[in-house]
Image 1 (spheres, rainbow, N blue to C red):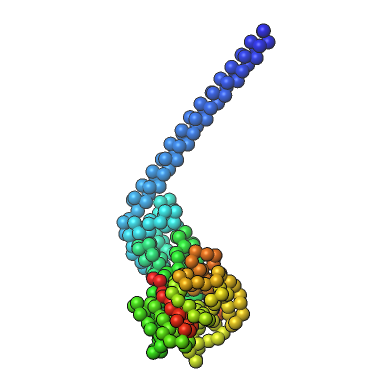
Image 2: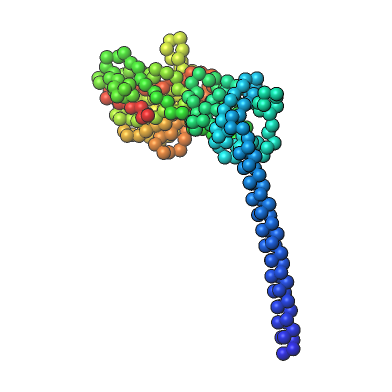
Length: 290
């Protein structure tokens, strides 16, 4: 009996010691939370006391924008530096220096201001890659390739172009090659409304004769993706009603049927200007889905 009482006393003592230890830990945790909250308040106050108008010296070009614009994206490079107080003006003009391409940086400011990226048309692939690297360095979100308003052009009397130049349709039993008016720099979607026996579509590079066989990226009716007649990838077999998404990236072309897996094809020439096209025969019909 004495032994049982002794064990009970030891257990009670162990429990008291554990409770005392936990109470000390709770007090320490409260102190850490208080210090953290104070730090967060100081960080917020640092950002609050920053000037409402921020001047940036980007590669020798001066930009003026609002503090709210620079702080638009939580966790960005601007957010961290302005809140920490570690970023200070580098010149007598009180401008913050950034060693970046000022021409491309204009797009970054527009992105912060509007939340959308300007169309990439007119930028070389080198510039597009540099812009993407700039966005990553500034810890800004990667943007989706802009959806492009592809419009068809055809002078063939047997091809009907309608629906604000988005729909092309073959009216007789013949074949015709129809191209878009502008090169693709982002993404477009093509709906298959009717198919003939050997319809194909995709992207091509214009050459002296109007097109270049060396730079065709073709999606076939059976789902094969080919370059120069060589199958390099596959998507599902195409049917009426399918919507095919085609995206021009810096180093590849991406084909997606409906919500299926992406087929990625490396570009033969990353600098080539690629135009959407459809090759139709019989009663084929295609519509660009904006």
